[in-house]
Length: 269
Image (cartoon, rainbow, N blue to C red; front, side, top):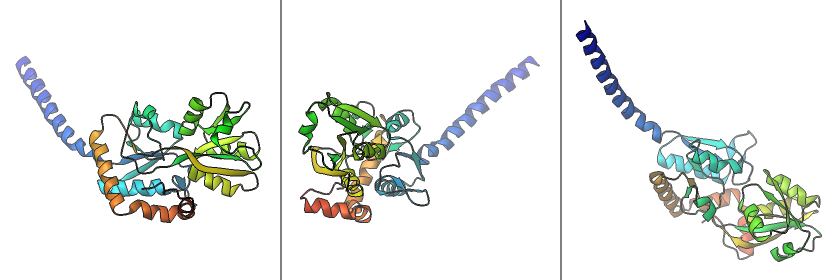
């Protein structure tokens, strides 16, 4: 009986190993299953919600095209901008596609694709403010508003250490600080500054010539070189098919005209 029992224990163990091996092979496609893309949906026209509450915008359409190219279903995972990198590092999302600047600081914790956009930092100031350039923010007593986790906040920390900083999760709150006179300037990308100045013409104006040029890229977790290569291949093909120009014409028509009139290259390229 003992010998028989040992036989069945050994046989059961071998069967478990065999089944485990089968399960391992079956689970491999799951690694190429749903493509989870993290975004902060409060940044129109790049990341936003349409009137029906569905994700929309330049980055959403880019993510849809990417997922289709990779043959994977797409899941947009909305979250605050400051939570995107932690979510990528912990494996809760596969990519970040949220108008994120590829900085050296961020490269220490995540990898990036090739750049797909080249914006610059600009200023939103009060309508009657004496501020004419970034240098004017170096004067004593200045107050800046900045969105948490953005390069605008980082730039202010390093280059305007004497200015008071008021940081928010929402760029709308940052704009309101300037419009209501509680902050002297809001540092953000020039296309957003253009739009906010247009929406608040009686209380704000935009200083739209960039004082810092940046590049946006898609965030990829460290060690995911294969996925990064796939993303880069997609971006090359999308660019070759004038995909970025088409997205610009759909979502950024006025901004394209403005940049052309100012002699500034369009950021999506």
